Image (cartoon, rainbow, N blue to C red; front, top):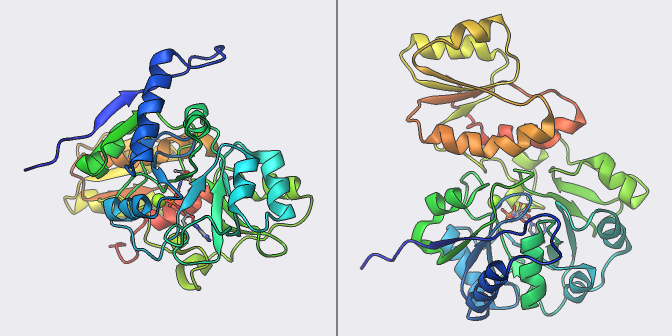
Length: 352
Ligand code: TXA
Ligand code: MG
């Protein structure tokens, strides 16, 4: 018998109120029950939706890997309510992590620290380090606080697909593999957290994200190292999920140097094209009238671009297009995370 589709329950916390409405707290308590029984709950965070289970329950965490089709070699992030909970999962809790947490938590940065004995090996893919993050989404934190359960939660999508930034994206990607989806509205940041390794000196960014290297350098009061530009694709996988070929839309995406020419060539060959337009020049405006082209003007501010990127890719994936072409983003640091996600979304070899 087919399993039923998940229940999607709206949760909200109107601004200016000390506590969420009673209905929201009741839903969070229901979610906590599901988690206590070893089940999975999709939760909103400020970055992307997460697929959560009790991080200390090995069987429950196994369920995450099965639902996502995620390789057991790719470790999970554990979400905590505060620094005290983070400390209880680390051994030892490094000074660098303390500085980052003090300055930037709750927020979209994940610290990799030595793993404490309470964390099951399945969470860390057998490794001796654990990734910890305190999410800024007030409802995600309230769920962790009320339940007292640290939550292992990767992005709530099938492995290698684009991360979800709405409850509807979770439903599309995971369907009946998750029983309960908490709908906290669209995610504010729109791309996954910055991951930083605090087990090395100087600390090293493993995945660029909403917080930039300068944000992290200000927090630690010293240098922070980027991975070399091509390291994620070719080097040893210090952060396995940061390998290339991740975050891929179903429609092949290209990032050509001359996007207008590429779009024009596709249209001439009878292909249907989606175009993420950053530079709306004369050529873009002329092509925009084509019947087989869906041109999406993208924000020229990197944070706003990030907020819309995955939602745009999800929407274009519904349009039966042959290709998606994206204008290359500017080279400066503020665009680093967007550039990273776009280059991973671009399929190597799809450039014809
Ligand atoms: O914003 C986010 O980080 C979202 C939300 C739900 O919090 N989560 C997320 O999880 O993006 P996931 O599983 O899709 O990505 C986790 C990343 C992967 O690249 C994984 O390899 C890396 O963190 N990671 C996890 N544990 C690690 C560890 N111990 N050492 C190095 N990298 C680790
Ligand atoms: Mg993911």
